[in-house]
Length: 148
Image (cartoon, helix red, strand yellow):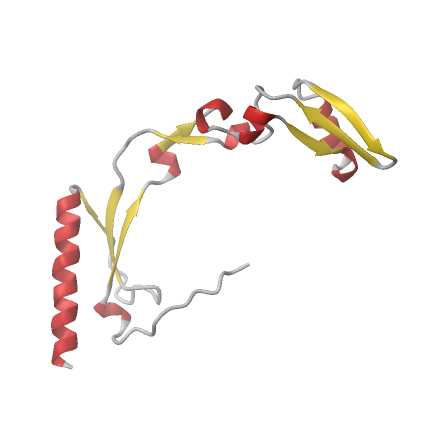
């Protein structure tokens, strides 16, 4: 599913633009974390899973996961496994926490339409250099627009 993005039509070709980004990739800027560390709602409050909505293999996995639960029958055809609070949720292996590493300050040629020159992205070592690059480029754009 693609999101509808509203963009103002650029006044110049893509090679006249730069794209500035501060990135914190998960692989280098975070670590696996526990439910407790990330404030996981299921860990704090417990959770329930409707038995009738699970494929047989997932139901088996839930029942044999080692987590504490009670089976609660609400009505005919409506049964839940109710897991108590204070234990890892089923998505615990996907929880991530930042490690405090500063973001990457990246500058790419082009815009959302692409990088026609195919130039390599630049990685600034200091945030101030990235800001200065941005300011200089903004001024260059303003000068071009002023020319007409």
